Image (cartoon, rainbow, N blue to C red; front, side):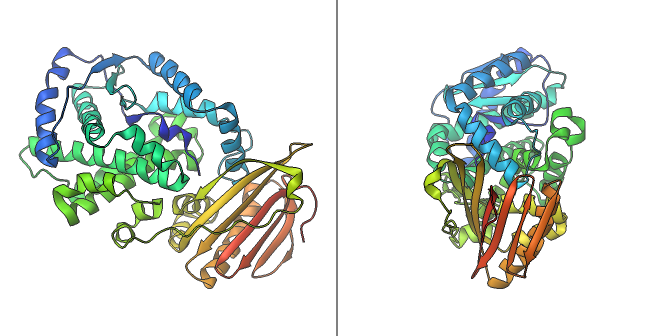
Length: 406
């Protein structure tokens, strides 16, 4: 899935900073030297910095969204999320994106203007320093592997784009933690206990933030994933490659969220398998609003939401690749979603279809499934008619049709 909110800024999340003191920025040279010592990557030029209020951040985000995303982009992504069952029918993606980032950002690095900002707020000096380290790590990476180009190259695949965001945020989070460890007399790395603590705390603080706590699980997990899973991924690559890892992940980035979640698949170069989409009847009556790829992260969240976390994670680990296309009828503007997922075996595909029955009955208020076999689900809901069927290890979906599908 496309994740528009992840392509705006490289940020430190889940914290806030008080009015930054002048001595905070006086530490920049010291922090730069420490980060370079850990990575072997020198800073090639000074990093401009500034202070921004939350109101200024909101205006900045609104401007960036206007520059980078058309209203049609948000409408299309919002429709896909709703038809998949990842957000409720009244969800406003654009407003939620702005509200969420305004609430969550403690600092950010603008990789287009090459400048970092610390946000005013109610935090303490230590939080400000943590945010500054994180953003300077982004700036260092940007000077060697231009982040704007890095992200834009990943947009050819939605799932790969999310993986690249995890590279950016995961490395910055890892380096931030390693730097603080070194400053306190420990090793310039991240211990397993610290990894577990940080990723657990970051994933479990939603209750302290009104916008984040009210967001659908998909939005919450998509926001936090680049930091938590990305940090674990960076650690796995560091354990295997050492200093080389800080360049490797940018020069040879992971191609899927599956490679982020399972680094062994990154090392083994296991590529996502992108299935062909099911044929849409009367396709000339429709025009395409958007298309893209689906990843293990999408299916893990979807299945966990409707079948439970343990079962969702277990089943999603058998995912091999996915794709989707959102169509709209030329006359009545009725949306139809066609998507497909490939699994590691026909048995895994059958298990997914059985689990997807819970998705269908959970995401709509009224769902009738008839006929139903171990390889086919047909029926209708308030969103329209649907058909789900297996072809080998691939599961095909047509959902939102105006009349029965056969």
